[in-house]
Length: 319
Length: 287
Image (cartoon, rainbow over all chains, first blue to last red; front, side, top):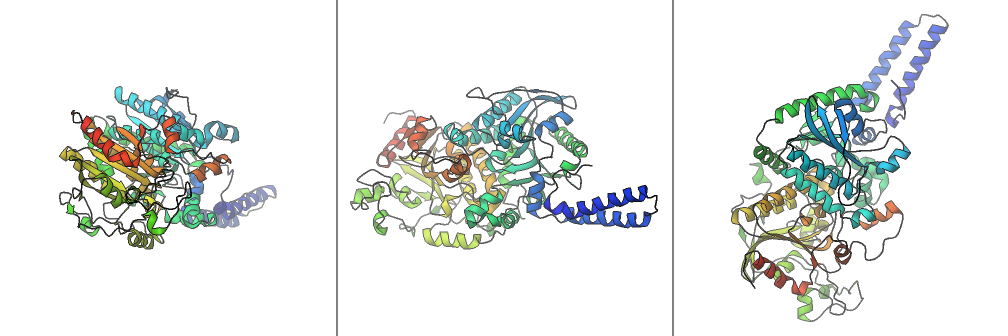
């Protein structure tokens, strides 16, 4: 396993892990028997690792959720679906690379899949606008949603965005209008919808793909009304308190499950999806399959009614 | 019942209002606040004060919910829905309880929206009026719930809906619960809309963030008051992102009309008459 771009809280245990590797090499080189020392160190490393990951703060989860090496939407599509055909454009103004969508097979079923797309490096991120969509992205999504309904395909949405892009062009072309249209489209769509928060669920831009029959969330993903920075800046006028605010916002999967905002947590490998893509794909695929089977064949009107009931009771149930 | 604890009353029980509201309006004249647009002294004439429009330049001062209701609806026709519904600190967010108390005291309101049914020159409507003085008109669970119930009640009673929006967006102190109000209100609008009834939204200063990106922009007819700031992202956030100063007309009603985002800008003075005209259109009769 490679440990590119270690996070702050990982540093001490990764250093210990490196020392363990050095010790192993040294023992091999000098032909010494250091088995008991190595074993002791191994136990310490894995204990520390366990401790670190079992007691993550919201701020630390937020760092993992935004990690550059996490699988993004197109990675999941490649790994889990077959024969993906990307469809482009909103038929009004342009094609937004911050949102991808199209047709694919999932375990022999044709589906429509849509998601925010971040970039793997600076160049890609410039093209993808860091996964921050303009109205064109939401309008493309809206178009593909209604297409899914027409052809009775289930809709699968991957959420991974810092938020809708706050820029002049986006405002001129009706960012708010594009998002509210998606909310309506999803709330009325006569096809099963599964939304997965795979990384960063940033505010209205995330919700524009999040009105679903099942909302699933990876264990180290976040979903928030506002970024910790934004909140600290507006409420406290002090960005340096973002870390503290992150905890208050209740943006992690266990908190949101408790609040009834999401339906299920998909467990990531202990060290996060970015450290083991394959394992992550396996479990994500299994959970999509499970829920898809559950939702397939339901009466469309009933689906829409249940989706409304689901939204209707959020925040009203005892927490 | 938890619902009782939250102060949610069963929906059929409407509350009739006492004749005089405790609301403390920021009437420009009362506070001696000069017109922020032209700097002239606050309006003193009765009519200008009632409309809260600067007699010199026509600037529309932000208006409290009850002043708006008084201006738009027929006398004594307004019956409030869910008057006792008030917010609680769902997440245990530091300082939220104090902010709510402060907003309640300052405005005399229970929350940032007042909903109910009323008549406009005799035409029955369901109405929602937001008040930006209450925590910037932000939408939390109770605001979303009151708006959703207004649409549900209107659907049952076959009434048209008019919403006056004024909001800074989602209520951060309620975290994701507040974000979900965007989805809930939008879903309620579309169910309402599917039953063939009319929804007019009137965007007033300021309407931004999660409210703009949900029920505010979903009207069959979307109106705005002159000079209102309407948009998704706040101007400060945009300026920080693009590292440029924004032109002064950016995100104003007139800018949005130019860009095809709203149907019409209507002066406050003509608003009641205009709404009546639109209501009559949808009853298939002439004015």
